[in-house]
Amino acid sequence: MQRRFLLIIVVTAAAVVALAITQPWLYFVNREVNEAFPGMTAEQREAVSNMPEAEKRALLDMAKENREMAEQTAMAQIGADAVVPQAEQAMPPEMPAEPVALAQGSFIDIDPIHGAVGSATVYELPDGSRVLRFENFRSKNGPDLHVYLSTEAPTSTFAGLGENEVHLGALKGNVGNQNYAVPAEIDLSQYRSVVIYCVPFKVVFSTAAFSA
Image (cartoon, one colour):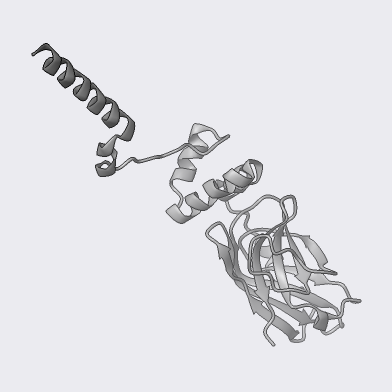
């Protein structure tokens, strides 16, 4: 009788240990995780939490690879839009004749947190100068964004600018029509696109490929 009682105790203990190790009930329980975004204040984390799910997931994935880039991108995107002043949204006023369009493309989304909409057109003005003009433009915000002409038409985040890229200046605003002078010595036929580029992290935010 004592031996049987001892056997029952041993079997019961073994069963308890096995259950503690395998925890089979976890297969029937949802485990929700809602991590705070690293390195941000409570107010900033709340702003990030109000982003669309795809953008939040992309930022958290980015933080696994480059925390600083993710933090600065998140800070830029929850900040206020930088709108180009109305006075800078018109074509140069001293040109009375109609400008001629030389190349045109439309901006695209690269991923949930890198993208823009609107058109990019290179015009030749009556005096022979050329200007790149964005119209109906709105871009995702990002740290230190700049405008480039590229010999490539990059469609992924880290695709780069290709060779002999032409820097046209810092992005004037992430919202609004805007103009950028195109250097006279540039052979436009060698360039395939306009790229919005994050300089410190070497990230493509959007591309407008010129149509053939």
